[in-house]
Amino acid sequence: MSFIATPQSMHFPDALPLQSGASIRDYHLAFETYGQLNAERSNAVLVCHALNASHHVAGRYEGQDKSEGWWDNMIGPGKSVDTNRFFVIGVNNLGSCFGSTGPMHMHPDTGRVYGADFPVVTVEDWVNAQARLLDRLGITQLAAVLGGSLGGMQALSWTLQYPERVRHAVVVASAPNLTAENIAFNEVARRAIVTDPDFHGGHFYQHGVIPKRGLRIARMIGHITYLSDDVMNEKFGRQLREGIDLKYSTQDIEFQIESYLRYQGDKFSEYFDANTYLLITRALDYFDPARAFGGNLTQALARAAAKFLLVSFTTDWRFSPKRSREIVKALLDNRCDVSYAEIDAPHGHDAFLLDDARYMGVISSYFDSIAKELA
Image (cartoon, rainbow, N blue to C red; front, side, top):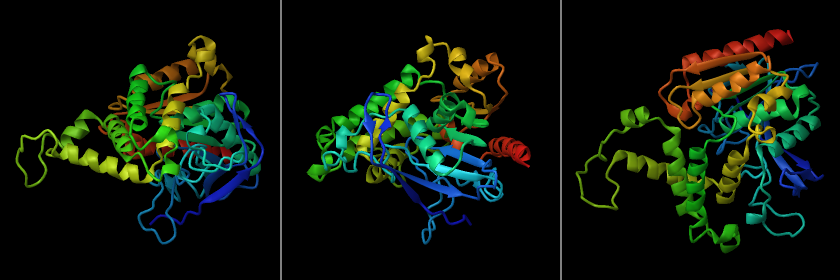
């Protein structure tokens, strides 16, 4: 049974300058902590979340049996990231829809809901906001920063923006930037949302509607890219829905994979915010630390002083092992301390969230070594 988690919120009245040149003030960050901060304040681990996750990383909520955190299989007492030894912090990013200030909240200057007027945020902006939270918590240096996918980009960015504040960075199923194909997937998903008649230019809140059709399609597109072809074939193949035969219809749901995608899309449209989806996928598109160095990743990573663990998965075609190896090479070029594990797993990009003995073993061994440093 998972432990009980307690959501917290912290208010920041002062303006946070953003990469776009805009700023945001009077905002809140939702977060959770697990374990105890030691006397030296040296055992803190920051966990950065991916696109549709939140600060609820581990444990469950009081009275809610099915409310486990999204990385509960990895983080907790006696688990790979052992909260008996580490003080783990999960933060919900600005612009999200799970507690931190986002598009559905009130603009302090206008008194109206932000909607489409919420400023564009980047990975670097999120890291700066996280650093402010850590300042408030009295944590000057992290034992580790850990993230998968978009969370891995944040972990990497931490080592460049605040090299003196990170001892270890664990970057899982991530990349130094998005490929053109990945940007294309994000754009198709965004177009599905903004062309939904219920989107109203991003100000749908005041119309009392939600662009669910666009959100459903966006989620279906994303879900296809998170799974591997092998997993989809093994799980669904060409099987028809139970009890039906071919209807020779262009609109009925006949195949099991169609039913599964519709279900995922329907579920997503009930809890995720459309403007948040636009913001977070754009942050993914913009992340590119090498851009300021003429595309030279080795030069971009020269500032990093942390020790690194990178993990990739063989069937992850959205954030392929090749992309992790680019980071590994650039770090080695800078004589950084780097460990790399390429896990032969069938689950595609979703593998970073799932139980795989080899994957969990790698993470566990790495955090064991960090704990020994603290002893």
